[in-house]
Image (cartoon, rainbow over all chains, first blue to last red; front, top):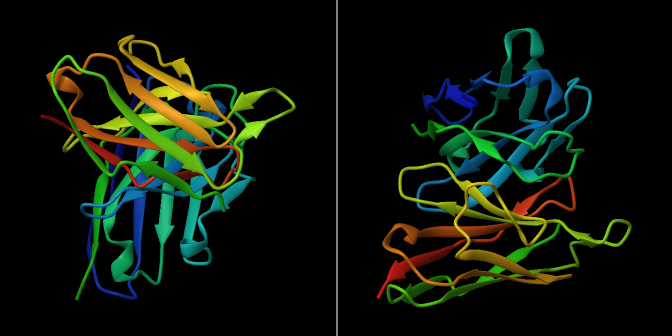
Length: 122
Length: 113
């Protein structure tokens, strides 16, 4: 079964740091583009970052550039999001999502995890 | 960035009736080189992650009931549910993926009248 399982969410103070992980299973992780998408409480979806198969091509939404870093470890079938200088507006459920096989940098997401919650508050 | 605007924000439809949700992009998401519209539709039920319904504006994802259909081209798109079922109550989002900096619409909440 194709599965994405996020972890690492929690409560962090403004200005703090947090690292999220996404464990992939049921497919050949190293051959897919991957993304993080977030959803603030009661709000819509916001794409956050994407990374290619080799990890050498990355994209970020403007609001997180310089603060968030997307990375992957294909040997461990894992996707990561390192977040620093966190703000209240970063509070959200963070979803790990996969691109369809064969996609380039422009893709919809065909598999989603259940999400992990990040709360930035003092 | 490409801005996606959905209408209406919320919609109440009777069971068995048609539901129509619109999505407009601030610039065309039609890539003329391959004649594909880089537009997807998602369904999100409470407490669940989004689920893709439609991609390339009109291609139904495997396993999605055929009462769901997508249409449109360029900057104007529509998601239609031909005969609303109780399990279709959800929030629906459109997404453009013409750019690597993907963007979503604000969502349309669909309820039963």
